[in-house]
Image 1 (cartoon, rainbow, N blue to C red):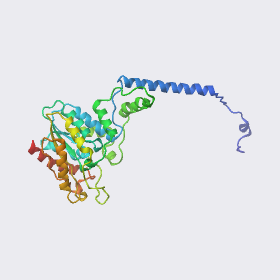
Image 2 (image 1 turned 45 degrees about the vertical axis):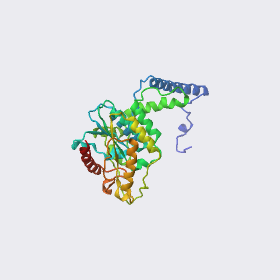
Image 3 (image 1 turned 120 degrees about the horizontal axis):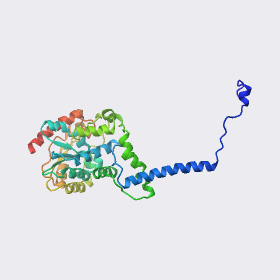
Image 4 (image 1 turned 90 degrees about the vertical axis):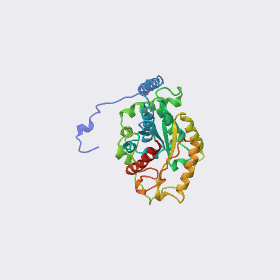
Length: 337
């Protein structure tokens, strides 16, 4: 006891005394659980009847990119040329530069994690309702040697292409989180609360919603924000075709309508990263992939090596590099139109 306190204050009785019984706590917790259960049942019911909006796909940059390209592929357009492929397509193919050269096209490039057959789903959606669509498949050597694609990324694409507004399961306990809390977050909260991007991408684009808006305004092109440093380890430059590639190429071709024209483009790598004989290896892989795809047009022959200063990563050109690369691409496309 503090000796400085007045004697009267030290001896004063407490002003309040709380008596809490176990039954009171049981009733209180039962009420909270009942409210939570009602909310869960309500959300689950809204999802099953299709009353909730579709997944916003704004939780992270990968989801945002994939869903935005699915939306762009699904929208009516007079453009008959579409680029599809991995992230080298997403970043290296600068649509505004092509437009300046009179090439009207859309960039549906996404991520290598999807796999070539998944790129075919976007290409097929773009081709719907078009008399003579032209699809240019853009692949980086890194994508061609990747062992396995990501099932999670494919599910995002399928959800974005299919809408995902209805029910997709029963009332199993293991599905409760997906039918309630995840649905509330992905379909409602992600629309109301902006999701910030991290690092340099965050400095460039801010939030996932801003990334989506810029992708759409630039015809699907995204800017690389990293900076390539040739003095740092960049991984192996020994490129090859993974076993999965043939089946994926055949699935890609099967997804296209008969009236679609298909052409292949292999993306460049930094000169300092290339091994001796890289150009010959790329031509060999290109010919094999072209055969599996049953391409209608000869592959677009652009340099397979590019100056280091034009790169942000081994797979992606900087914005200035993408502009220079796309100018050469536009010249090639003008010849083959």
